[in-house]
Length: 57
Image (cartoon, rainbow, N blue to C red; front, side, top):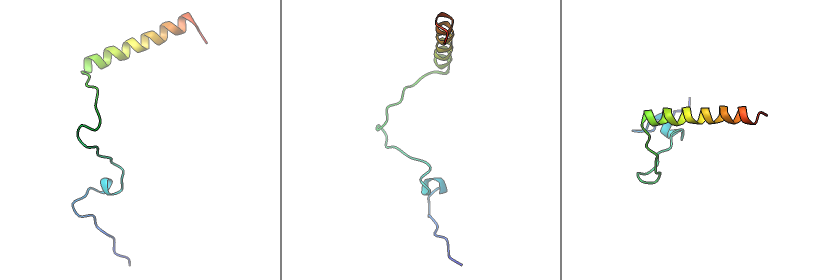
C-alpha cells in the first residue's frame, strides 16, 4: 500500500490550496460597522423597490 505523504505543520486545507493567505497590506478592506451595513442594505432595497414602482419591467 502506498504511504501517504504528510504535510508537517500545515493545515490540510492550506496544503490542498483551498485557503489563500494574502500578505498584510496587500489588500485594503472597507471597514463597516454592523449598523452602517444594515442601513446601506435597507437603503438599497428601498431604492430598488422605488425604481420598480416608477419603471416596471
